Every structure is written in C-alpha cells, then in structure tokens.
Amino acid sequence: MDYLLYAVLGILGLLLFLILIAVVRTFFLKSKVIEKQPISISNDEKLKYAQGLSELIQFKTIASKTEQDQTLFTEMQTKMKELFPSVFTTMEIKIFEGGSLLACWKGKNKSAEPLILMAHQDVVPAPIEGWIHDPFAGVIVGNEVFGRGSFDTKCTLYAFFQAAEELISEGFIPETDVYLASSSDEEISGMGAEKTVEYLKEKGVHPKLVLDEGGAIVEGSLPSSNRPIALIGVIEKGYVNIRVKAKSSGGHSSTPPKNTPIGRLSFFISDIEKQFPLKTKMIPEVQNLFQTAAPTMSFPFRLLFGNLWLFKGLLTWLLPKINPYGRAMLSTTIAYTMMKGSDAENVIPNEAYILLNCRTHPIQGIDSTFQTLNRIAKKYNCECEIMEGREASPIVNVNGDAYQAVIRSIKAIFPDVLISPYVILGGTDARHYTAITDAALRFSPVRVTNQDLKKMHGINESVSIDALAEAVVFYKHLIQEFH
Image 1 (spheres, rainbow, N blue to C red):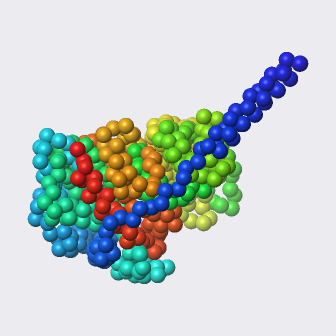
Image 2 (image 1 turned 180 degrees about the vertical axis):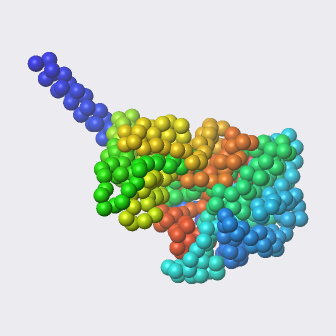
C-alpha cells in the first residue's frame, strides 16, 4: 500500500514539476508587437484601385446552377479590358464556355515551371435586406469598398490583374510563364476550374505554384492574439454526403408502434451527439498554427498553446468540446443538413432519411467515415448510403520552393505579420489543380479581421482600400521574384 502511495505522490510530483517548467517557459515565450509599415503608394493611386474594384463589383456575376448567364461575365471582362489594357494586349487570352478566363503571360525561361494566380469572378446572391449600401453598387465610404464579392474574391482578381498591368507597363518580363486564372462558377462547384485544368494538362503545363483563395492575413485569428497571422492553406478538407435511411411498413398515426423510422433516426443522431465517433488528432500543420500564435497571446492561452509538448493531449481532447472551429481543425465533422419523413401529417412513413454533410479531415477519409457511421446506424436498424464526395487534398510541403516563395513575399510586404500553414475547412477551385501541381496553396494577401470574415457570403461584405493596395504590391513582388 505504501508503494502505491509513493507511486501516486511521485506522479503528482513529476506533473507539478513539468507544469512549473511550462509556467517558467511561458514567461519567456512572448512576442513583441511590430508596427505595421505603410506601403509607398499614394492616396490617389489607392483611390484608383478602389474605383477599379468598385466597377467590377457592379457586375452581378451571380453563379447559378440553372440559369448561368455568360453575358454577365462577358460584360465584366469587357470592363477588365478597359482597366487592364496592357494585360489583354500582351497576354494570350482563353475564354471557356461559361465565362471562365485564362490569361498567359509568356516568360523568358521556357523550361521553368510556371506560376498560376487564381481568383473567381462569380459571387453568391445578395438580397438587399440588411445591407447599408446596395450590394452591387460598389460604394466607397471612408477606407472601405462595399459590395458582394469585394472580398470573395474580386479584390484579389483585381489585385493580380493590376499588378501584371503595372509590371507590363514598366517593361518587366517574368522569368517564367505567369497565368492569371479565373473561373465563373466556383461558388456552385462548377466546371470552370476543371475545364481550365484539362486545357493546361493538354498543353503539358505543370505549375511550380498555384495560388488561390483560402487563408488570409487575419487579425485576432486565435483568442487574445495581438498580431495578425498570414494563414497559408496547405490542406483543403474533403466532403461526403451520406444519407441515413430507416424503413418500416408505415401505418396510421393513430396507432403508432415503437421504433418508427423517425424514432430510430433520432436515436442514431443522439448516439453521435453523446459521443463523437470519429478520429481526433492534432496534425503538424495545426500544431504549427498554435505554436506560431502562442507568443502573441495572453498568459493563460500562451501557457497552453506555447507548451504543446505538455498540453497537446489536453487541447486535442478539449478544443472540439468547447468550439466548433476546434472540432473542424482536428476532425472530420458531421452536420445534419436535410431530412424527410412522411408526406402527410397523419401517416407514419414507410421510409425516412437524414442527410449528413461530413467535411473529411486528412486523418479520416470518406471510406473510414462511412464505415464508422454505418456501424452506428446498424445498431438502430438504419442503413447508410454515400451520395457524393471528394477526398481531402494532398498536403503541400511547407519546406518546398513554392511555399517558401510565398513566405518571402509575405515577409517583404507584410513584415509585421506572423506566418503559419493552415487547414482550409471549405472548398476552393485549387483542388482541381492538384492534378497538375504539388503546390496548390490557398492564400489571399488581404488583411481582414474576424468580423470581416463573418461578412463573407453575408451582409455588408467589404474590403479596406489599404488592404487592396497591399495585395497589388504583394502580387507584383511575387511575380518579380518568382524563380
């Protein structure tokens, strides 16, 4: 008995010693705030950029699965020819059916692998209710450009076209071919990017770097962090829609039996809600983000996130339980998005179903997710069926030349920000480009806050004029320094 007591005391002593080490280490683990450096662009030039973006916003290029009108995109591209005349006279332009666009700027070195910069032309709908300005007026107020697509993603579309326009006007010729790619149906997971990739594959194009939307330069990305972090998406989660069905012989609602289809589906959902059944793991890319942000946090968060050698297991267990974002970073997620039972209020359904939209994590793909959920469904005499899906993207090598090229440009233009790899929770066009490159990165060089991100696909979407100007400068640097 004494030995057991000594063992317990020994373990407690060791734990207290390790916590003491972590506390002492945390006092020294503190990042100083670096002041944001103003870019050397005149206010007149910034206003010119803002007005150019405003003009693009005014085209209602709303993506539609049923009534896609290419005229909307043709009209905007006509305006782009006015805004970027050197681009459209210097580059080879390819317009695909549906309105997706690809511009090729020939470089000096024909054997060098090219650079592709991406942003989509289409936007989601924007009902005017709740907006302080017409969402398609491109209103400029103070330091903001308001409108649907101002951030997602007409700002970056404008920025890299403007960057190329200025470089061409200055007589610059890139070392390698540079492509400017823009689909017209990203918001509806359309075929524009896929057609573009097929075209490039036929031409034997294998890009060194593809840079699409995804992460951004986010202020307040993690609790109490006092420095913006450039989040470079190196992984894009996949998805799978799984339909879970329960059947019965039906009947009249006046004499309901036990275990009706809806009842069994409810037990299935309750089972998952009580005990999350999928794998949870902190992969290196997520760990890197936490470690990067830790020195900028207040003491309690700095203690936890800055000492993952001690608290990694605790955080992996705790974060998914207290925060949906924490769950999404560490696991495949499960969302119940649709359901159907009887067509009449007094009829017990012969069949009922729920639809699960699962965003698959690299640690657990479609097949493993399906098998896990199907085992639970069978406990309640339900059955699962995969409707559609795609696996998570390959992970980009953060030590590779392409990732390092992006880092160099971030450090040059945004010296005050931290940099970290990032897991993209939604879907982007970049996933199609993994067929022709090992380095499809998701990063928009635009400063935003968490509040700005909440406006994306919501009301009062906007981007700051200073952020737009910085994005132009970033793309100019990346094009000039690439290879």
